[in-house]
Length: 379
Image 1 (cartoon, rainbow, N blue to C red):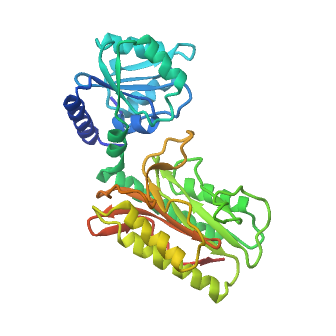
Image 2 (image 1 turned 30 degrees about the vertical axis):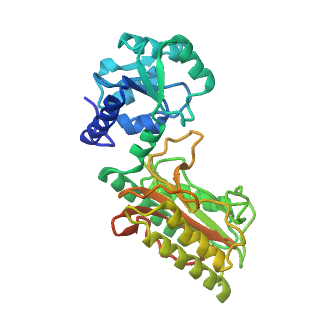
């Protein structure tokens, strides 16, 4: 018997029904998933990409999971799948051969199989090997559908993101309590890691913490230089709870800031407040983006604005190449519309001052899941 799933079985069942309805409508026999985030969305479990893993979802019949034997037991613990369809392989086996065998065993060497063409796990060599072994298979792109399915969060996912947001808020409060002038960026990273784990967050995830924050140094390296009076510490925390990541940025001034810095911070917050308020169901992404982009430029806080003003949040598989999810972003040309229960990391930065929140889309506007006071913080 499997353990309590991270995502409830009834929710996973609804996802399978929706996906299969699309498959039937388009004449697709099977969906092949290999990117961890998509596999997790489908079955509630995935492992980081190292050795290959595959999830096969047929239009009819049981879902099949193929992964390393050393992870098979954990998959059975958390994914509501029959033991007979969780296929483990030895580290010297060829996963592609096992995948092909499973496809052929289900009578689909001549079938229509949908894949995610935007995924980072299916390398050219891997895909060519699959195509060579299944020369009569027709491949179809399900990238847009799979991206759309992950974008809207169920209530259980919202609760996980709320818990991650609470961890972010509490960890930031603890850093403000513990950090002292003379400490370094690295000292702050250590505090963030310790408090995140103490508060129940997943291990190994902290976020960018640095003194050097500019438009072209948003993710500067951690340094060992002591911070003194008058310095600004950029703290971005990205804690995860069962893989679901909340994010928050705050500038922390060492000492007493002058009025001009405090006024600049208040202006940035005011612009972002208007942007968050506009994040209602049906709003167009470029219109939401324009509130921040035009507001910052008109206020003279930036001479150019070359980055997105927000991006998707949700489940992140640890130890992959994707540290941020840019499947849905806010830019001038993005005309997609917001849907209720999408969740985003909305951020604004200028003159070394950066503010961000984890924001849930509702029918009335954006709701902050992170609740730390929105002002220039001080130590």
